[in-house]
Length: 57
Image (tube, rainbow, N blue to C red; front, side, top):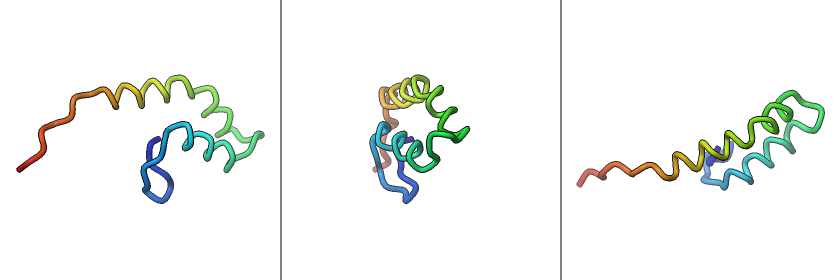
């Protein structure tokens, strides 16, 4: 949810907006994303707060 279809980093809100615009208001995808939005945002925030593993030297 933080990567664009082209593989570029993107804010989760922008990504969700892009998905909704691409599929349109009548799509089941739009309905699912709209319903799951709170959980998607929680998941992204959870991952962002995880400790980062040490980088190899």
